[in-house]
Length: 586
Image (cartoon, rainbow, N blue to C red; front, side, top):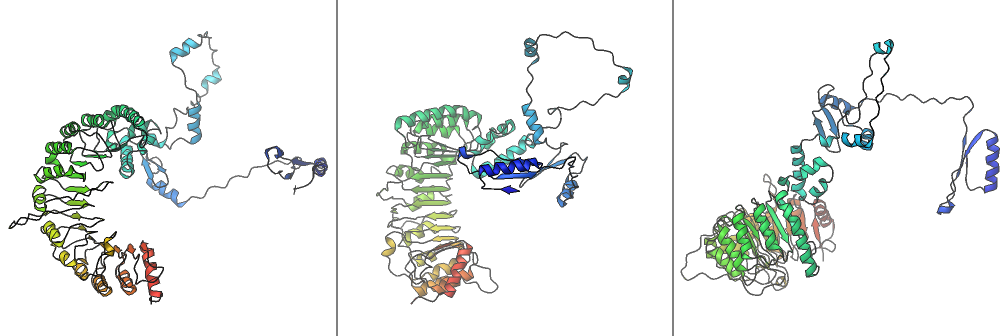
């Protein structure tokens, strides 16, 4: 029985009376000094005299279905055994399971024996006493089997039995998904086998080095970069010998020594990105181009690099250059001049964008000269630039075009000078175009897009953002776009386009699936700020089962509560249900 909340004298009298009747009383220590409530008084009956406690014999464990599978995969005596974790099953060829935890702890607690020399010096040599002769009965008895020690018995854990090549492949999957840091640094601290696997140079193929004191005073940043440079002097030959992609972020004073180390220790480098770096000289880039014969991609966005250094690098490594990223400034004209002079005939990706401080000087880029200088171009991005294309001369023949071009981005947040005529000069020889981004290009019309030679366009962005969408007059001709690419379009952006309600209804009717035909591939639709009606939206959702993104913000013809962006299949289907059940707006 148990009593709680009784006074101390009454509890004492009751305990004495029960003790006299053969009852054991267990009272926990008071915890008032610790600020805890008083524990209840627990009374337990003592066992009767002469009563013997017997432990019930455990019932045999029933055999589970999974035991049958284990016996089938690794039967006893086959030389194989299984080890199972949450989502992995290992079939190992060495006999015997891993040591239990108790044996592993005993092995760690066993003191190590000192070397024979030190043991002999520490203890005096004991006198040998003659052993007594064994009795005849003891001589005839068989000798007992020696008891194996933990070190001589079962082997270590399963991690030590995994081959090093398999462990490196497992680490390689994690590095490919999340990068080498911080995983490899943490894995090297687990055990010696993991440290050996994490030290393989093949895993350190992509590295990002950022200044440790970004935003600190200049003196502190210089000291931190010098300290990191001292570590790189050991890391480069021992870990980064097979480095392929290197990114330097916010290095201000030690860029030249780092690039020198890269040139000496990383001959397989293929990609170099300098973001927010200062002090990049022409000697460092030219030395890197000569030392790294596989370097074909260079990203210099948001870094202060002189145009002469970039031009010298392109003259040395231009024949193998594939990708180039630049930030537009007053010195970009000299770099583009080198590209127009066929300095990089194998260039496939060219991106020129503005930095944080927008440059108001228009970029003058001759279209036909760029087509001749970079005939293998596949991606061309001129982002947020005030691009002023040079008009062709009188009687000039059209350029060769970009026959391999797959992506063209001319997006801008302000007014630009891209028209139907300029777009035709760019894409007249590009039948393989897949992505066309013309956001902010208010002078482009559906009639101009219909004349393009590309037949399998997958992404079309025509949204108007900023102040340009408020100054746009009513347009017509949107059915020309959807009727041409309704079977291949996956993403369509018409935000801010002031098409009429009837025009939009006819345009989106092209996505209605007909009996016997496949469903449209449309998965993203942006109709922000348009005059789309509820009936048109519901018909599009019903005809496109793969629609995962729908933006209906600021659509005046839709009922309240539905003017928002929908992400995911569930939200899009919920929007369809609300459109079918809600009354039409007055």
